Image (tube, rainbow, N blue to C red):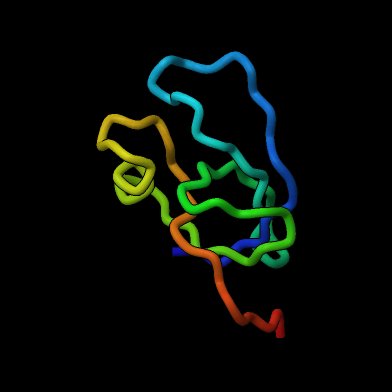
Length: 82
């Protein structure tokens, strides 16, 4: 699992059918690179979130066949960057 901050929504009108209409968000680990995550919980920019990767990301997005390697599974209520 990773702790990331949501930066913004990513708009992608051309997608493979299996992705459906799930929201995509740009997230960033503290001091790390930006990544794209499937939003499974309804986040907004600025939220600190918990992300899972690999097969856990696919299952959290809704299916073992879902093409995701990073999915947001929780919004952190209280978080200090320190």
